[in-house]
View 1 (cartoon, rainbow, N blue to C red):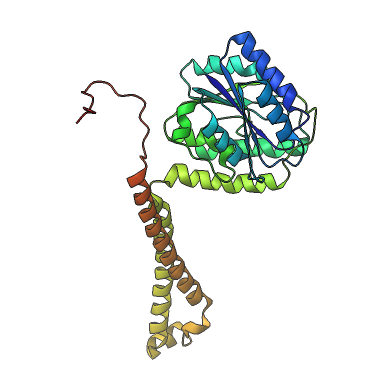
View 2: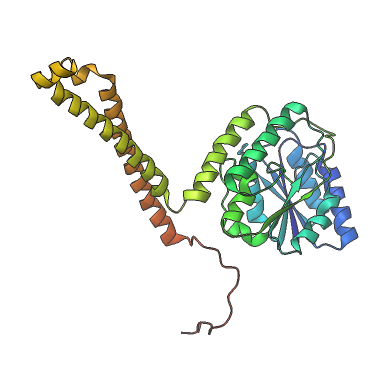
Length: 328
């Protein structure tokens, strides 16, 4: 079975057309298709359209949020409701073309677990395309997952991935990165990007700031998620070192300035630590170092607790051995 998960926010005009296109592809290709619409707190008639589609087509399922919780939450709810072995995600605004689905599956057959769309030719305004390209380059550089379009909502996944990858906040655009960090194979294909027919874009300038902050979170999770003290402790030790060296230097100056003969020979005035700005910088560095170390230890305790409940590895397959006796 193939599941198509579609987050919806005020898309009443496009839902029936999208359903028709998905159904046409499924009929042409012989897919056992399931369509999951997740209404993320729409204020228009989107939910009424979804209810009508559910009544008309048994392949359609609907999930409705009480309020607008964001795209990541909508996708997570859709992944939970989906039952397909292969899960597609696509936007409800008709800019993603369902006719591309067979090409995604062909790429999956090459041994990949995640296939992301690449909107090489886009019909979005320049102020959206430019920052998006910069952001995509930054994500690829920092995470090592080389995709041209991390922001593309048209993606294809193996269903098992969502047993291991948890979504929250606005991390939906980083699912390939989070999956790759656990050993799943990621690739991409160029997809047709169509001009918007209805409504308007839900993203503005704030998306850039949020995306950058989310990138820092993902970098930390994928790079140091299981060893937070390595980065926090290193920062703490660095602050301790700088503060300690600074205080040592000030102490030497303080001692020398109080040895009359030496101070006169060097032309030094009596050093009063409270008058030196460096003294306060050094104290601040020591305090900051202690905070980094403390937070690192707390993060290690939380990580250890999580590891006792959830496995930190991902098993591809097992062979050999004797299965356990379930009757005992």
